[in-house]
Amino acid sequence: MTKIGVNLTKSYAEINEKIKNGDVVVVTAEEMIKIVEEKGIKVAAEEIDVVTTGTFGPMCSSGAFLNFGHSDPPIKFEHLWLNDVHAYHGNAAVDCYIGVTRLADKSPFMYGGGHVIEDLVSGKPIKLRGVSSTTDCYPLGEIDTEFTIDDLNQAILCNPRNAYQRYACAVNSTDKTIYTYMGKLLPNFGNGHFSGAGSLNPICNDPDYEIIGIGTRIFLGGGIGYVIGEGTQHNPTKRYGTLFLKGDLKQMTPEYLRGVHYEKYGTSMFCGVGIPIPILNEGLARKTAIKNDDIITEVIDYGVPRRDKPILKQTNYKELYSGSLEINGKKVKCSSLSSLFYARKIANELKKWIQEGMFFLNPPAERLPTDTIFKPMKVTAELKFVKDLKKEAIICYEDCDIKVVAEKIIKQNMNHIIITNREKLLVGIVTSFDITKAIAEDKNELKDIITKKVITTMDNDPIEIAARKMKINNISALPVIDDNNKVVGIISSEELM
Image 1: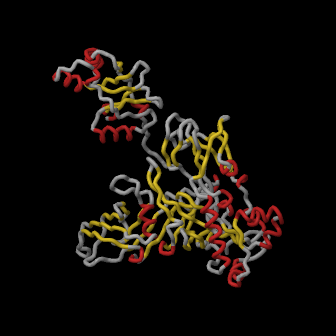
Image 2: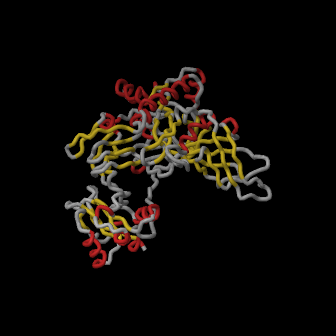
Image 3: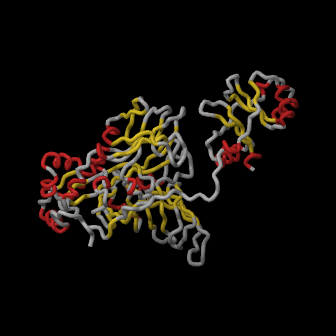
């Protein structure tokens, strides 16, 4: 039996009977705040039967299981693509899982798995291309076809992490613009981004998981879905609870499932979630009256590319929704990645479903854990950064004689000379091959042989990033620069080796 708290005022059966008879009293979480303020917790617990919640924002850990049925002759996918987005094939022969952050294989890389799911629920045809290594029972080696959602046997939205209890507000202290899953962050605290619906957020209204548990029926993507467990990265002790959700895509609408693209980051999908909170006791009446002032979160500097980013200050959703916050005496404009408009629309849509007898409540089969310990990734090999391996750069100024550059290459036994201006700002690079070529072609001016389009790296880049830059661009060294484009060193393939 699921524990539902003390001071019981009503039961699931009683509430469902009211839904059936059409006399259930349902309010949104925002409306519940006013009711508790005016009438008190005791009266609110007696009068209100259900409080509805809602959130609509980017849910990167989302995806869908699809079953296509068997072709004739049959095929067992080894690889498959949906609208050129690579889907995971390692299920049964003609099942797949498509994740919303997977990018299309073809440029301009602004389309991904989230867009495929949106197009699918919109009824648009999806191009399926698949290949197989073939077996005796699956002899077909390749397929190229189209389908719509009506052609599928199953289309199941399956989100391993959804409906975050809260989000931190992301800002950027560096001198350059950075592009993150929290959006485009301007330099020198130029802006701030947060997410979540505050007092409408489902878990904020049931932080102890009295009614949100395994089997809880919910609003998901415009249809009916279910909680099937705690979400990945579930961290309730730090007020970062998450939910594992599933639902039938054939019931859902593109209004509440939207593929999105983040500039210079990748793709995701906005997903609408609404959870009804039955007011079984006074404790739930109190919890569902939570205000934005009471939802505490942190302002974090995303300009530091490490797991444990600096916490600059504490804040709350009231301050975040005001449109600005203060950091070190500076007023910083902030905005939400989530849509409060759609969060309210979801809460009201769910409210309408319940009032019209279209949606009944069910107790969870099992409560979600409240004491999970969240652990970071275990790293068994030491991670090295460019700053660990860089060496001093040999520098010549842009007005230097070409002979001086050649002498430095010989004297310093270096293949790469960095060219800067007098302020040590990067201008270009010259290699020993460039000098040899200049002699062969009788060129005497340094400006004629400088490579000005230079691929660079920075101190805090992992060495794997530097190695990939060298490989992709077929070069053997990278100048190391700071945020102001000032040369602070060089790293070559020799150091990486």
